[in-house]
Length: 437
Image (cartoon, rainbow, N blue to C red; front, side):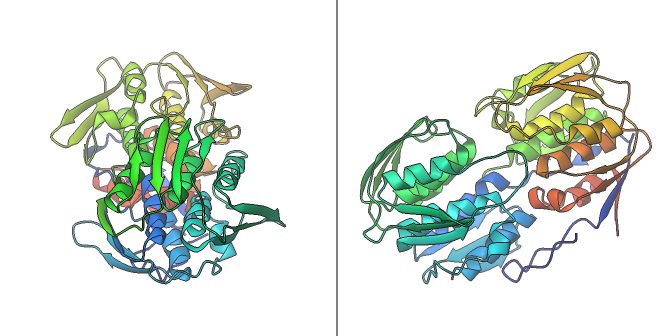
C-alpha cells in the first residue's frame, strides 16, 4: 500500500512503490549519510507538548513514522514549521493543546504514539487514546507505562481498546522500579516526570542512547534530570519548561544496517554522521563476524574484512548489549558467512518472522525456542519476499543486495517507516535497485 501524503509533513513522499526489485551481486562503493535516529526523534517531537514555547529539532529523518507523528501532533494543536536547508529540521509550537483530538487510525499505525500518554497527562491532566500499534513483533504490553503513571497519581483505565487517563490535580513525584529496563516506559515516565510536582526516581531505567538524547533535550528545556546514561534517573519536576534547539543523534540501527550492506556486497562504504561507539558492544560482534569498521573524521568506513564473513553467536539485550533492532540485519549477513551462528532473541518473542523470507532465498536457518541456528551458505539467491516489520525489511534489502539474481520485496511501508530515502542513497552507491508498482 502506498502511504498517503500528510499535510503536517509537506516534505513526505514515499521512497518506494508497491514492490522493490534488487539485482544483487554488485559491490557497493560510495558515501551513504546516516540519518538522525528514528527511535530518538519520535519522543523528542512528543516532548514539544510539554511547553508552549518553540522546540526546534535538527537532523530529523525523513521517514514515514515522523510524518505520521507530525500529523498526530498537528491534530492535537501543535503547529510545525519545516525547513529542508542543511537537512530536515522542524520547529514545533504546542501553545494550544487539544488533548482529546486523537486520531485512532494514526495512533494504531505506530508504537511510539503511546508516548503521548505521559506528555498529555503532564501538560493537560488528561489523555485518551487507542492502544498503540506498530510492528507485530511481540506483545510489548504497556503495563509498565500504566503502573508508573498510576504511581504518579494518575487514574488510568482500559475500556474497549482505549486508554482513559486523568490527573485533574496534576502528577506527583514517585519512586518507580521498572520490572525490566523498558525503553518506551522509561521515555513515557521521563516525559511525565519533568512536569510532575516533586521528585521522581526511576530505577532500572533503560540506558539506550536515544533516552540520553531525550534527557539532554529536556534539560535544555529547563528540566532537572540526574543520572543520564545510568539505570537510575532522578527528576526534580514541577517547573515550567522553556523552548530549546536540539540536534537528533545519528541512527545507530541504520549505521549497523549499512555496515552489513558494505560487508555482504564486498564493497566499501563511507558512512558520514556516525561513529563506532554508537553500536555499544555490538561493535565487537561486527568485528568478529568479519565486518571491518574504521572511524574517519566524523564518518565510519565499512567493508568486509580480508578473512571474509564468519559465523558468530549473538544474544540480544538492553543497551549496551546487542540491539534487538540489529538482529534481523545481522542474520541476513550471517546467512552467507562461513560456518554456523546462533542468534538468541531475548527482547521480543515474535521477532523471527523474517526467517521464512530468508529461507525463500536459500538461507539455512532453523529455530529452537528463541534461538535461530544459522548455517552459512555460499550465496543466497533472489526470490519474491515480503517485509514483515521495519527491521525485517532492512534484512531483506541486505539479503537481496548480496544474493545472486533478482529479489522482489513486497510490504514496503515498513521500509519507509524506518529509513530515510534508503533506496535513493543505495542507488547512489551503485546498487541495482528500482521501485515498481
